[in-house]
Every structure is written in C-alpha cells, then in structure tokens.
Image (tube, rainbow, N blue to C red; front, side):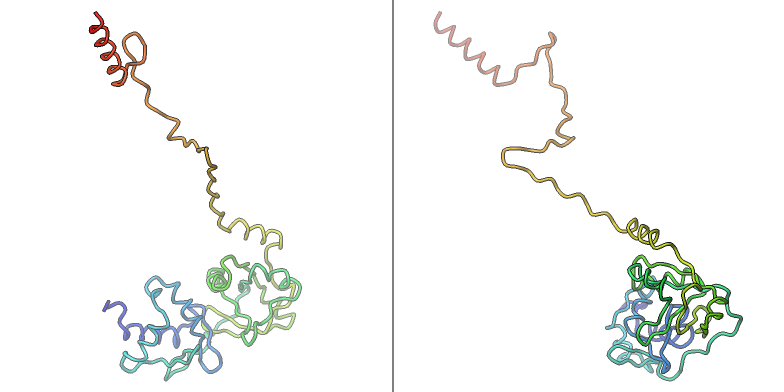
Length: 248
C-alpha cells in the first residue's frame, strides 16, 4: 500500500478538515456537525495530495484506521468525538463574496441572494474562496461582491463560520455588485470550449487532396532537359532492337 494513502493518515487529515478548519476548504457543517459526503469529496478533489479520495477510502478509514475519528451515514459525515471550532472573532469585513450559477444570475439581480433549501447563503472573505466553492456547482460561475454595510441596513445579519466564511439568511437586491447580465453571458460563451471541426466526408469516385500530397519531389531529367526513361521504356527499346536485328 502507498504510505501516502494509508487509512490512518487520511483519518488524521479528515479530523483537521471536519473539526478544526472546515472553512479552509469551503465547507460548513449543519447545527449537528454533519457535512455532506458529496461536498467533502468535491473539496478534497481540489487538493493535489488528496484528490484520489473516494467514498471507498472513507469506508476504509472507518474499517481499518484504529480509533477513527469520523462517523458516516449514507450521505453525511462528521467528527465522532468533537464539534467544529467556534467562529473566529473579528470585525465584519466591508466586502464579502459569493458565486451564483450563470443561468440563475438574472433572477438573483431581481430577488437577491436567497438560501437553497435548508442551506444558508454562504459568503467568503476572498474572491478566490468564493470562486472555489462556486465552481463546484457551475464551471463558469458569476462572482458577486457584497457590501456588508448596505446589506445590514437592508436587514441582513452575518454569522462568521471560521476565518474565511460567513453565512446569512439572504442578501437583498441593491447591496451587491456583479457584471451586467449581457457581459456575464458573453463571458460564459467565451469560456466554453469550441467543438472540433467536423471531418470532411469523401464521396465515391473522389478524393481530398491533402497539402502533403501536393508537394512532390521534382522528376529526374536527362542532360537535354528531357524526362529520363524508366525501366519499362528501356525494355521496350531492347525488344525493338532485337526485332530489327532478326529482320536483317
């Protein structure tokens, strides 16, 4: 077994992610400390050292690692004997960042940022972290910049979730900035990979001349500038000479 992939080593790393710094990986637990397994695996896939981790590796930790510090249900995972660290203290940043799917950007401009199901609105202290989380749901998300003072004036309340994340119930329209809908749509189109050119079809009785077929080596010429005879021409000439000698 690869020493870097031993279950006990992964168990220690999971303890760090789930109990000490989930915010460092763009993760937020529910009130009981549970994380979604799918979200955890997405976060780990962004780490070069841990991108190999799959659900089977989590199961292996539970079965093989002595004193595994995690417990898991069908689609949730949490630390077994501890709860995530409390929120970091400090002043509320003037700006926070969030990402939305490109397809849902226009409704967000009209209605504001709203929670998804039982999940609160999650904001990051840096654009990089917001984009990291946003790309888990959309390869080309739209980045929004939230003015926290304006949002608070409109009734929003922010709760710190570690050093890098905040949550809130909603962000009203007018308290965040983003690109114009037309510009956002154009950026998405520009980032989409262009399809490869379709292969040209060949018709019966025809062929496609490729550039390599056009360039040929010059034909050999004799001293008088005439095309040199090939072996077939030489053989015919010998036969003609033999016929003349017999006639004579």
